[in-house]
Length: 109
Length: 114
Image 1 (tube, each protein chain N blue to C red):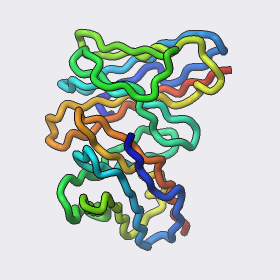
Image 2: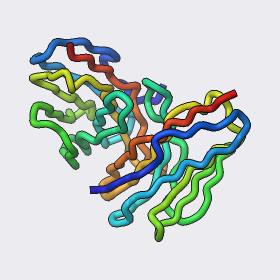
Image 3: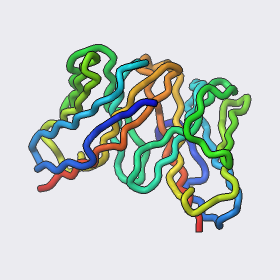
């Protein structure tokens, strides 16, 4: 099976930067997704990486290193509304996504 | 509105009962995925359908079954319900048309077994 590891919880201050790390098993790798999920709501797509490097989208950036089985999501200029869970998901053959347990980010004033 | 419709939004039922959750995928998407999310847990993959056929199976209990119909909507049937089946059940669809193969999730069905 695929093991996706990410921290359970992180706390940061409004306006700061937070980096959420994710490690995965490299066999059968076919892409890495990040989703945001507010409590009780559906996950929403944030980013997708399939090649090594950094993808930037406004305040959110995602990085991938395929050789290390490692990705991170960088949230800049944190806002209170960014308080949510962030899910790392590995894409395998057949477009099946395996999700990590999620990282709950709490943004404090 | 994500384009993926799940009904009902909430469901309360007793142990031992059977329920059916319904999902209509985003227009044009051929794949449907079902996930279970228990309180403060991650998304656990249950099953995937592609154009009416089962494509992949996860840790789905034998008491659970699913199907995808010719119009591409899908139903997840949960029987002999137990307290531990209480969870959010998400349906997602994909079709690869957006080029990123990402999932679009429905708003979920919150199942409470009492």
